[in-house]
Image 1 (tube, rainbow, N blue to C red):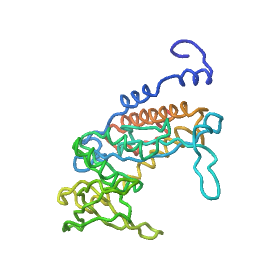
Image 2 (cartoon, rainbow, N blue to C red):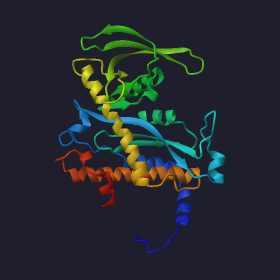
Image 3 (cartoon, helix red, strand yellow):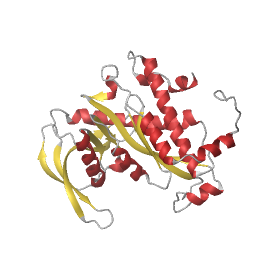
Length: 304
């Protein structure tokens, strides 16, 4: 209305938006999402010169309509089925700024694993990727290692406790060089082995039992990346959960997506991610390199 003086109802806007090809949305996400952290002004977004980024996925609930119920499979447990269908999305945000660098949305039935694997191909040079335990297996570590070596980046993954490895060397900081076997998912045929570094530690929280923490990293030199520093650094991965919380609760403000089809729901998620990028840029401008960006209120910047 501001641009053309035409009044359009929400349904008319939705109809026009639904005919846009998905390739156009992917292009918008690639073109609009970019890094904003500067090493001198935002030291909290870097570790020893490496840009800190996190990788994880989430799910968005969609209203029950004839279109969505026919296309989406609801998650279920032995006792009950989920109330709403879900659309997965994976996002690669900058740690310390909550600025999304890349995103992949399950617009045609892709799993969270597939979406996150797509984002690895968009990893930029000079990054240190923090990844959650869902991806802490040999197959994903091998995939991450290949992409990191191509662009000159590294990863720090929380590994699952049941992974079996072969120890090749022990370092003075308590970490060790290990060999991980990578198997084909269905046949369990050995595909290859990779050599990475493993770190064990304990997480202590007041009022909670201590929990073991097992990390895998492609940073093999303990002198340039000591084990204790990496254990402390991994705690910043929780910023990804805060990013999803801000996008779902503060930016969206509704329990369900407003779209009535899978296509428009995926577009709505893309718009939420683009909006979160705009808020992140304004928080960077408000901080002015004087205060940490995350000290600037997300809610107040969104309101303004």
